[in-house]
Image (cartoon, rainbow, N blue to C red; front, side, top):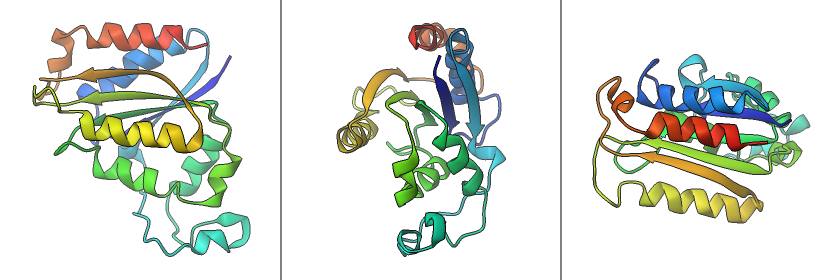
Length: 179
């Protein structure tokens, strides 16, 4: 049984990204302990690149925000799931702020070995997810992580549009496959 943290990068509660993450969580929770962290529930400032976390006690960031809580959740997770809407061919700014704040030696305490990527975009362009997938692959390579799967959904813009696709079933099935 793995501990899975799903980081949902959408500010829109009940939106398409949220529904996709929920479907994955429902499947994954059959054999794992799953926690969803929604960026809308946390105040996380962007990294300013000062590198003070490299010299501060406990590698703590000087910024006083909710990232401390997210670090604690990441320290006990075996797997991370990144779920994001696609904005101009990238992940959401709030999710990017969390990911950038992982530029800390504290990440060496994480025991995460596998990643999942869940993306939702309004456009239908074939290359819609290419930039994010490249960045995802670079992270996998750098940290020697296993890709545990992806669900990439095009053409869903308005709240609930994802309900008319096979994506929720795909996310659920992917979640069920995680052991």
